Image 1 (cartoon, protein in one colour):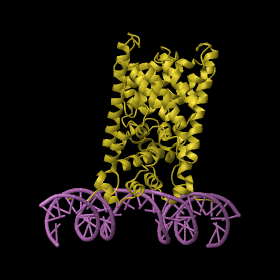
Image 2 (spheres, rainbow over the protein chains, first blue to last red):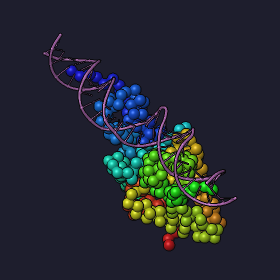
Image 3 (spheres, rainbow over the protein chains, first blue to last red):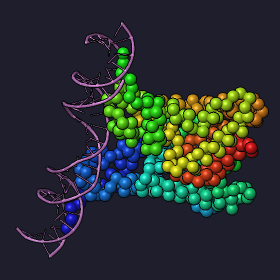
Image 4 (tube, chains in turn cyan, blue, orange, purple):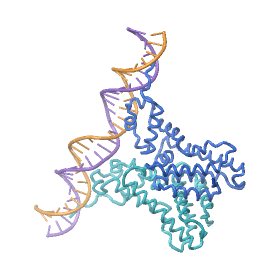
Length: 198
Length: 198
DNA sequence: AACTTTTTGTACACATGTGTACAATTTTGT
DNA sequence: ACAAAATTGTACACATGTGTACAAAAAGTT
C-alpha cells in the first residue's frame, strides 16, 4: 500500500494562504512556499500540482476568513440590512485591527492578477461576479421583506454595495483607522438607504 | 564635457509606466525594464538610481493619465459636483474601454505593495491621503458655494468619495462593462447627494 | 520477504534577477 | 591633441526560480 503524506495538507494550505495574504501572489513562488512548508519542491508539485491550482484552494479557504461570509450565509427571513450593516462594521474593525494591514486577499489578488492572461483572471472574475450576484439576491430578499423601498433598483444597489466592499478592503491597506473606514462605509450605506441602526 | 544620454529619459519613464500599469510592479524587474528600454542595467542604475526611485517618478507621470486629475485641478468657483460627476463618468468610460482591463496603476499598486515594509508603502499612503484631502477641500468649496447641504459632514463625504474611486478602479479589472461601473458610481453619488445631471 | 502504491529526494538543464566595480566610450571645451 | 565629465558596457559573485525525470523511501498487504 502507499506511503503517507508527511505533512498536513490542510494546514499547509492555510499557511500558504497567510503568506499570500501578507505578501501577495507573486511573492509566493514555489521555491518560497516549499521552504515555508518545509517540503521539497517535488512534494509540492506532487501534492498541489501547480501554484495556480493551490491558489484556487487558498481562495476557497480564505473565503471563510472574510467578514463577507457572514452576509453570504444569510437565510431568507433574516434582517438583511442589519446583517449588511454589521458585516461592514466588522470588516472595518478587522481591517483596522490588522497590524499588518493586509486588506483582503481576494481583492488584493484581483488588483494584482486580473488583466493578465490566464485562468486565474477568469477564476477571480467569476468569483467576484458570484459575490455580486449573491449580494443582489440578498437585497431582493430585503426588498421582498419590505426593508428596501419597492421602487429601488436592486441590481444597481448590489453593484454599489460590491463596490463599497472592494473600496474598503483596498483603502484599508493605506488608511488604517477604524473611524475613517467606518465613516466611508456608514456614509455610503446611509446614502443608499441600506443603513440600519442596531 | 560629457557624453549624452543615449535614450530619452522621459519617454523611458512613460514606457515603464505602461509596463507597470499592465503587469504590475513586481513584474517590472530591473532586468525586464532594461530590456524593454533597450539599455543595459548599468545605464538603468546610472540614470534612475533604483527601481523604487523610478517607480515614484512613474506614479507622478501616471497622475496625468488618471481622470481624477481633472477633478484635482478644479478652481474655486467651479461647479464641483458637476465636475465630480463628469470625472466619475469619464473614469467609467476609460476603464470599460481599456481592452487590457488595467484598472488604475496607483490603486493597483496600493493593493500590491502597501502592507509591505518599505518606503514605497509610505509613499503610496501619503499619496492617497493627499488625494483624500484634496477631495475634502473641493467638497468644502462645494459646500461654501451651496452645492452641498450645510449640515453635511464633508470629511465623511470625502472618505466615501475616495472609497468610491478606489472601488471602481479595482472593480473595473474584473467587471468591465461601462453600464455596471456607471450604475455603481451613479447610485452611490445620488445616495450621497453629490450627483448632478448634466 | 516480495510486491504494490504513493510520496519524497535528487539531479538536470534552464531561466530570471541583483548590486557593484571599473574599463571603455562619447562628447565638448580648451 | 588632451582633459574632464558623463554615460555605456562588461564582468563578477551571488541569489532566486522553473518543470521534469527518475531513483529512493515509506507503508500496508499478501
